[in-house]
Structures are given as C-alpha cells and as structure tokens.
Image (cartoon, rainbow, N blue to C red; front, side):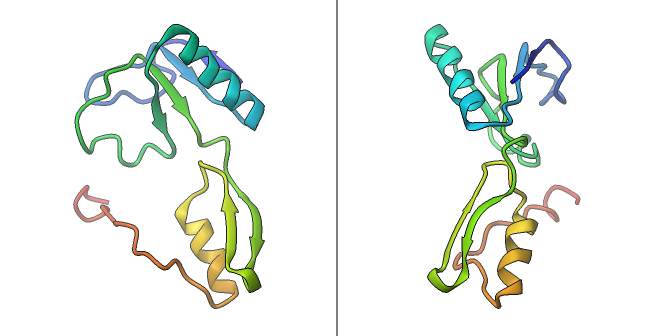
Length: 117
C-alpha cells in the first residue's frame, strides 16, 4: 500500500486529500483501516470516483482508494453466488453474469444522464 501526498487523487469540489491510500491486497486494506482507527481519522472510501460529486463534501483529509481491489474473486453460476472486490466495475460483473444468462436482481442507479455522462 502506498500513502502519497496532496493532489494524488482528483479534487472533490476544490478539496484535495492529504493522504491517498491505495491498497491492492486485503492485508494492505486492513493496514490502512488500522492506520485510520489509531488516529481516529475518518476515511473517504472511493472506488472509481464516479459518485464523488453526489452528496455533501467529505469531512476528511484521507482517501482510501479501493480501485486496486478489483476483480471477480468467486463465481458459481449454478449457486447464484458471486464475490467481487470493492473496486470491481459494475460492467465487469454484469458481463460475467450475462455469459451465464444471469443478471443482478436489483437495478443499480445509473447517474450518467444526470451527471452528463
């Protein structure tokens, strides 16, 4: 895991994080959360960063970027079980499910039109 300085992650409404943590393993994720807990510091959790402008601005100087924890870890189509990393893109999950003629049983919101995408 790396902890880098300011401007390592895109700003959110003019706010630049002081620390950007980018774990790529579960052990590194535990280290990042432990680091924040020891300092009683809140973390902003970010995947792809596509929803950062929704809601109120973060009240933290520390960003935990989960995009490095991507990929489907387990998929058992016959059991209807899928486990994916926190940074896995929804398109990857939907494509994998489609190969087995399956789909998500909920409709995740698509903010693309609202956000101009």
